[in-house]
Length: 106
Image (cartoon, rainbow, N blue to C red; front, side, top):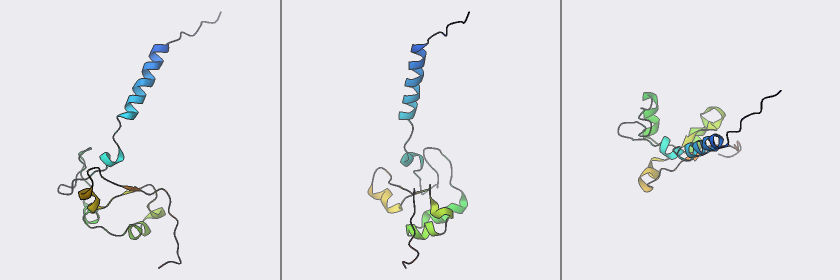
């Protein structure tokens, strides 16, 4: 005789609701990657940037110039401009998903 599996509908629904709320309350990338330029820390995580990155963060360069020096042209990375931090209340970012390079252009 096989034992019937006990249905736990309420527990299953509660698990789904908890997972949905967790997903909904997750911080946005703009919050996670925001940066305090005075202390070089990320306010959300409280972690400091590596010292080797400070120089790059303080000065902006053209996006393609940055991407050209990176492996796979920086696909998967987030980029922002310091000027945007002053102009907008919510930080703005570029997320590099695909790069199509025109090697004939100057």
